[in-house]
Length: 311
Image (cartoon, helix red, strand yellow):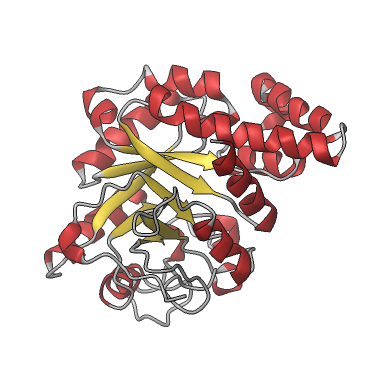
């Protein structure tokens, strides 16, 4: 099997139908299985057109795709790299040296574009807990997008700029305004948090989007929790407080109850959850152009592969 060949920058703007986030808790064989198991019957037309690499501290980082770790027979796959504002160390601004504590945003942008051949950057605020960076003076997502625009202007083949959109927040109006602002600062694609976690809330959130937010191309996030605890963790990552949110609490209870039915029944429950999320994505989300699968770990990969078979 030959290593994945990255799509040339000349193919931009990057508008994939299906992408996946490289898990940081998965072994090499399962990563290969995820790609090989989603072939859609044509070895020259892989199911996934791009892999997305999270911007996490070294202890959490997945091996880079394109190396011997993840391989695919003759497949062409674009590489997308997340850039987290939380990696800023807060000592020399976001333009410090590459070795400054917390990393350096400008270095991250340039390195992923020139060394790793990023076809797009996924610009996000980042997880403060993972980065251990509580500094209130860290750059906002708006500052990061302005920096990305500046770095792009100096590159011969600049990556696209992607951003995140969270339709699960109670304050959907503010999130809608943030999405419109991100678009005005150069965002060309939004990757959503998984609407299938709380589908009714997500559908209500879409009604708050303005024309810019509605039209912005979106990749719909697909979560593949392998336990009720992981489902709860997903809600937490989406800034949903289960303790104070009755809708989220009921959704979590459904997972807890399903988990009590035994391994076989719970596996069927998880596969159905993922396959239905994939079916619903393009029909329910305005501006949806595809899906972004987030398997998280080995069990999540197994669930995603089974869901693809189910489709």
